[in-house]
Length: 385
Image (cartoon, rainbow, N blue to C red; front, side, top):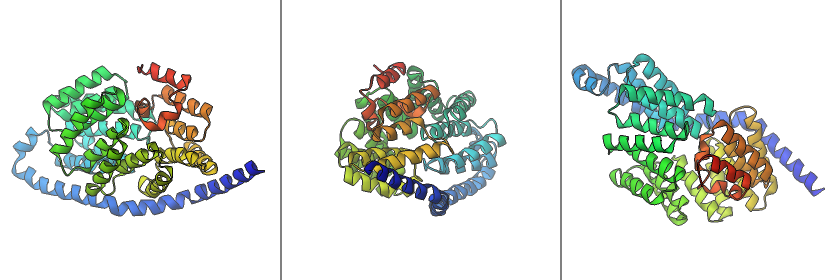
């Protein structure tokens, strides 16, 4: 009878979730509009100011690879939108596409397009087949058109890692990018986070590069959020929380810093705090599957089995209507204490080349699967020992 009662409660919860999902999405979109409109206005203002400069100093812009001011405006719009790392990433893609359509020789715009395709795959907005090959093609165009730009080689480095899972080629490109553009922050912290930490477990080197970014850009909340993620993987959880909180002083709407803090609280087994904190981030995240999948883990640890079941079922329902990363479904299923289903999701992630598996060796949300021989086989086939 208790199990039947639990199922009824879960079903009622899911009906509420599904019936209210479209209404909630509309409300969330309205709230986000005000937040991101500021980024749009800033980008437009910069583009307008630079259009005047372009008229007065055509030669200097040509040296920078800018031949078409409308393409440059679209590029700036893409930069403003992609910096959110959230629901606006798909919109950034359209601006970068417009930029390279207006000026096919614009290497920097091809680099931005490549990065956006790769991030859309990593954050689970698009299936790997719908973005990673396109990201690799765009990165190839960028390096062909602008081989002296650190941005181009950074894009290629990330494509080599997420699309090809070629760590050696990725590191060569990252190091070349840093040699060409030693002050390009994205090259340094992506090298630290994706290659050194996630893919290689070379934590000391990764810290060195990330701290350089923080010191060189003391107003960057993003750099601090990245440092918080690195602290998590080395077990320095109090430092991770402190750094995540510091990141939000500079970027109050940062999802990444909240994600890091939520993960650190879970890893410290402060589950009540983690649940309250995670629930408070749902709106900002757009009910991002990463967060929902991890809440399943939290609720399971609190004995809130019905809630853990419900949000796993929410993700499964959403996966029938939109792409949901199978690696994220694996987190949720493991929180649901369904080990076999979790491994099936992980195997699917491996089969389709889900780029989120880059974190599988060291990120805590995979901890419940780490000792399963079937999961160890996945790690071994991806080159981890």
